[in-house]
Length: 48
Image (tube, rainbow, N blue to C red; front, side, top):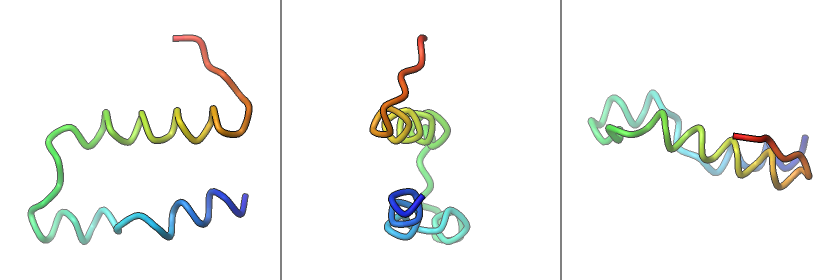
């Protein structure tokens, strides 16, 4: 859980990104990839 907290703290708040207009058009896919990477780093592999 500590790794997840550290990962969350290192990221910019999505609301702040939206306000500044710098949110990526592919933010959803990037978030899915980030979550997949985190899950795999925990030793769990998901078939796709």
